[in-house]
Length: 470
Ligand SMILES: Cc1cc2nc3c(=O)[nH]c(=O)nc-3n(C[C@H](O)[C@H](O)[C@H](O)COP(=O)(O)OP(=O)(O)OC[C@H]3O[C@@H](n4cnc5c(N)ncnc54)[C@H](O)[C@@H]3O)c2cc1C
Image (cartoon, rainbow, N blue to C red; front, side):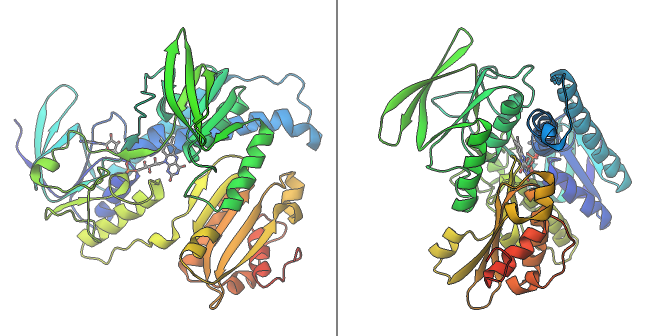
């Protein structure tokens, strides 16, 4: 066995938490290594998550626009057809380019890339087993668990990788399903449902809660999205659960039970189970060295991301909090700074949450329901894209912006958008909230015209009932 290599920090996992944290540690002069068991860097996000899903969402949106919207702009496509292999190939090329980019960034910032599966021997020692079984021992003063998450399987509907699949397989169907049933009306289910609906599938979403994106968006925003997706062709079975799935002759027969206990059958050629993700730390040996986990299998950390075992830290999807790439990234940066003796910090009050359907949903901070539940006296301002000049030019007038502000101080508590390019527009609201802005601050900020973000300003004006729609 080769000589033991020693580092200041070793990060296990090269997802957005791990790779961003490793680069920041390198920038701060720490001797850092990042261990990854998959052949490519980037974790869930780059390989089977954010990036491939958005690549397909963008491509399929072009196809849908060409079918349904171009003619209204006077652009006529007489012989439009789908070339799915090219679309999937482009997605793979985008992923390849970005994952290779991380390898270059590692070189640039002096991050050692260690290939293989890491397992704790003790709090400062890892055993890394490569693909061919060869082993390497590495040591560090600080070891960071950034091993991410994996899809949750339903006992009534176990994954078979072909007919009953997770998001990973739904990113590469070689042809559009005839009928795709999506179990789970959250971000991942609605995004991948949108991709395949646009490419020709009939799509039915079965969701346990009585509304879409439960827990993540304002109710008015969720119902506006539901109306828009229904118009596009989605069918919804809300307040319903799948109790059984039987695969026979390439078809899945699902038993669906509604909130009153009534049962019905749904038949599908593909079923995407997208009911959430759970922390992943299998085979890591962390429990064996005494690292504590919560009841949902997440590694427990203190506010400096340290576990109960001194010198062992954790960040990203494997710890509590929203399972989002940008949350993992910020934790990676904050922890690297803490380990370098700097005051690393993450503001958990302003984490944007985005659903990349069309229209898109983007939200940050408190929803109206959450403000009510917290007994905060609040006021709201809304503005509909129907009255936004740019949205009219684009012919994308569906949706609205809603601002929730503290009734006494006018401080912005939350911003909720459903509409065109909500994913981009929300950045302004996140920045405003990061700086503790009031609704009046946004209302007095000059915005370029005509632009979609003007809708945010108008919603802020509407908090004082001063917008043009008021
Ligand atoms: C379809 C889909 C779409 C998504 N879209 C978005 C989106 O648009 N925006 C967003 O913010 N989030 C999105 N997410 C969520 C996002 O991908 C995750 O929140 C993010 O990847 C979490 O980052 P992480 O660094 O914690 O872990 P991960 O990205 O999961 O990375 C963990 C890495 O650790 C490695 N690993 C695990 N165990 C070991 C071991 N023992 N040794 C070595 N390596 C190990 C794994 O191979 C993996 O590469 C999406 C997820 C999915 C599935």
